[in-house]
Image 1 (cartoon, helix red, strand yellow):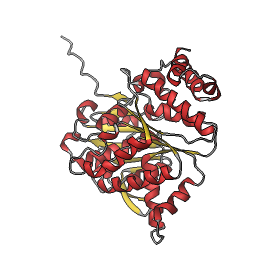
Image 2 (image 1 turned 90 degrees about the horizontal axis):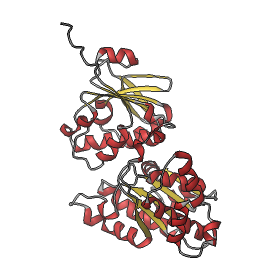
Image 3 (image 1 turned 90 degrees about the vertical axis):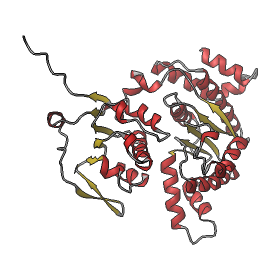
Image 4 (image 1 turned 180 degrees about the vertical axis):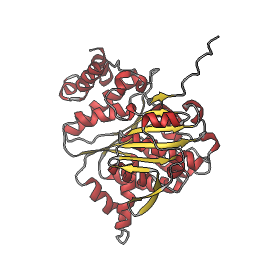
Length: 364
C-alpha cells in the first residue's frame, strides 16, 4: 500500500476526500493484479486524477490534465484506468486520430452553419463531462490552427480534458517554420491544464504481462519474407498482383482480402495518398492484417514515414493482429527522421520475430 500512502502525502493531510475517490484504490489494485510497481511519475499522476475526480463528483470546477513522457511509461494505462474507474456515464475515451477525423467530417457536414465546429461538438460531445484524448500530437499547421479552436471550445464548455502525449507542450509541432504559430495552443495548455511528466526507467510494454492480453502483440515481424516463410505462415506471394478494395468513397489497392483478413504492400498504404481515415475505415472491416515490403524507412520521404507511423498507431490502438514483412531486421528498417518513430519502434518491437534460419555448418 506504499503507493496509496504516497498519494495521500501528495494530496496533503486531508485524507477523507481521498477515501471518497475510487481512483487511488483502483490503480493500486490494478497494479498488484498485473504485477506492476507504480513509478513516482505514475503515482503523482494518480494523485492529480484523484483530486480532480473529487472536484468533479462534488460539482466543483475540475482542472484538465496533460500527461507526457517517453513511450511505454504507462500514460495510456493511466488514461484507460481513469476512464474505467470514473463513476460517471458522461465520459468519452477516444484516440486523438479518431476524434479529429470525426470532427473534420462533421464540420464539413455543417459547413453552411455560422459555427460549424460548435454544431459538430454538440453532436460529438452531447452531455460529455470528461474527454480522454490518447496519443495527442500535431504535425500539420492546418490541424494546429483547428486544435487551437477545439481546445478553447472544450474549456469554455467546462469539459475536463485528459490528454496523453509523448511530447511536453513545448515539444508539440516542433517544425521551426510553424512552431511559433502554434504557441497560442501551448500557452492555453499551460494556463488551463496541469502538465505532468510520466517517466520511468522501465518500458512497461516490454514486460510479458503487458503483452498477454493483446491481439496486436500476438502478431509477427517476418524478414526477409522468403517463399518458405510465406508458405509456412500462409502469407501472399511477394509478386501477388494488386486488386481493388472499396474503402469508404475511395478505392485502394490490396493484395488479398477474405473474411476479416486483408493484405497490403507498404506501397499500397504508405507510398500512396492514404490518410488516417482510410485506416480507421479498414479497421471496421478487418481484424487480421498483412503489410508486405517494409523498406528501410530512412530512405523514404518524411511523408511516407509519417503515414506508416499513423498506420501503426491505428492498428495498435484498435488492437489488430498484424503480420509485417520487411526486407531487413526491424531495428534497421525503422531508422528514419520522423519524430514519432520511437513510439512506432516500441509498438512494433512487441511483435514476435520470425527471421531466417541459420545455415547449418557443413559436416566435415
